Image (cartoon, rainbow, N blue to C red; front, side, top):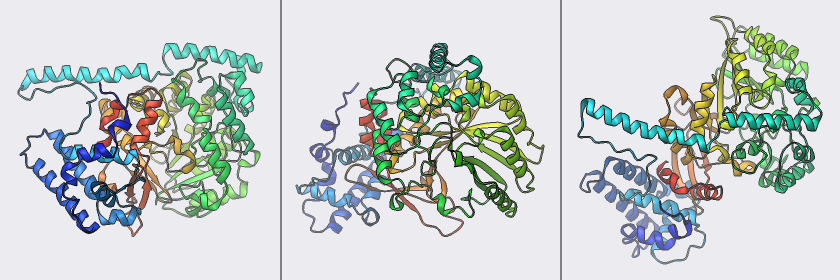
Length: 598
């Protein structure tokens, strides 16, 4: 296995060595226009030579030649300069002529070095598996060999069970039992209390002192929570979710803690900018897509209804962190007249066929209030599906009582209306028997359950998401969406490069059976909604910035239906992501193919 030292792998000298064919034609160029044309001509010539078959490259390398040539030609275009305000062409010309470019960072050199290697058929990375296919075999002999190869590929999936521990494992269940007993003892509570969701809401952890009594926390975590509270940022964790935190140090519960304990950069940003219009946290521009209070509408046939803007547990990266003041704030429930006006509005728009009730978390409402809300929605003849967006199955599974599940199921009407629940499970360690039982109660009442997975840094190691899909399908939840973390400045530490999502979907996810990988990878465009990441025709790589950030241009979903604008977004530098992986003990060499996903 290669050692990994980005400083020696990627710098100006390495780029000059790797790019000799490209730079050889630049030193006598008189203008940027001339340098651009020569670079583009050289890239095209190298590509055509490889694709002609003269170099004898294997098909995998030819695909990378094609993809890397597209990337290079795109960032070398004049449109790239105009759209991004930075010229990669000028940077390369300056490097070739020995002119200093102190603005260029290691991430820029890393991308260029890898793209040029890919262009010339010299991509260096190790495959996920050591499978070799003998194309000379046919029939049963070929099938037997192929079967053995597939066994070896599946061993990769099996090995992930050690790296990504399941909350269903015997060890985890024992640990959770011990943790639960400790929390009950500290809070002077009983098993009956634990099974009562109202007790968890009333005893949610809202300060670092209580959390330190119930779980092991570091000084850094305590400091971040204290700063968040001082800045009046919402913070709360249910006792149940605290039981998912391990006592011993390690990385098994890293994703659990990242859900609820705010990092310092988040606290600092929110403290400085929250409430300032020029730094609105309303990334999805819900304020611009709300035709009436409590309603958000981005698509023709579905609306979001937000009657209750709070939760018993606050997720740090929440899309609506700009709306939530405090956990279980008494004023979080909208006034009856506003709720009634919103429901009447839905009834007055027969094109609306589906309502997503979210917030906040609507399942924290009492059974009576929730039944009243569901009844009013079900009375609308145009509503064919009521969808409940909730994280309670994960943070408060005891809320899904037999009575609640039966009540929700009662609003299903055969051939007329359905009811579904969409939740957020982020990591295999969140999948417990309590969650499984909650889901089972819903499904026995005919309610489909889906998962929206936010692909943050803390759940992005090799095979973590694949293992999550396997587990949630085992307990009856269908994978629905994999969300690229939104480009919100305050949650920058949660973001991953889009290339990592493409890599995960095309490599790790492909190793598991189809019904367990039915989710779609999407990127949310402010004001417009989800943009699918499955096809290159939905986006363009526009530019490469000095720090190694890729700039993408996303095409809105309705681009062929109505006239609309595209969206430019600056991604996380791939090299920065690999550095962070190395810091938590990952081997970046295991992710080498990431450079070749665009």
